[in-house]
Length: 394
Image (cartoon, rainbow, N blue to C red):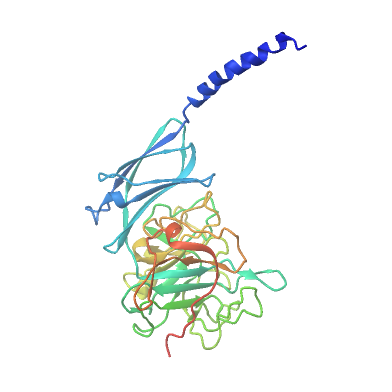
């Protein structure tokens, strides 16, 4: 026979449990509030602010929150407490985009954080990066191999574009993993190491709508050396200078012109997190290079060490923020150029590239690629590198 005294604690717990559960269900989560005010760019004060996407991206956790402001530019987000970055972007049918960003901040529970953004304006379309292959592959013996890096530029417009005197480089700092960017918030940015220009006299190198041009860091056949299987001996240009002993180029490939020497015996992109740019100095390349006092300087806050060539952010036709990992990634591209970032989630040395997304295919087959000046939305990651190497000029 069971003793009744042993049943009472069980009965008491059974009565108490619903009360406890009800009390737990009534506890509300401790959210953080983000109060955002969005202001239009000075050049386009009448834009529709309700089209601007506001995205709070988690730093430590793979979470994000998105919403759009009202017509007055006001928005309020409730997020879980934690560390975030904030990105704002929109693309308008008139052919321009707007963007803004805020670096890492801490959202505290039960507190409201206020933000005010004035949007940056940038033209969309034009000459863009279609593909960036920076992380290299492997030799057949298993060593890391990076000599097969390349950039692919694309004419995303409906007009012929002349590439003569177009410049390419990468922004400093070279990697997104350093702790500080001395150029943060400045309209003038520094170029890391060497800077290059497409040669020509003005109309030597036309690029028709929907055509690509490949710039190979070593314009040779890599198929016998590397697992990427890339034959870049038919690239349209090579990063080559006779004074750089560690560069190789097929004799039929035209050489880019090295217009700023930088340091070292070879030019390479960061295999983890480059920030490449396409640009044109508004005063012309010759006058830009000649004005050493204005455009060749130490990094901000320094009076010694390495000197950098500098450019104004308005000269940049396209730039992409490649990071090693979005957690704690340093921003180098101005937000008007790239409000987001892209990264190779599978890691380096796998023969993968970041490739721009297709927006639409027009009648006749010409592809228009996404160009919202936000690489988080515009690019695909971890795509096997496959440059378009069609002949363009005699």
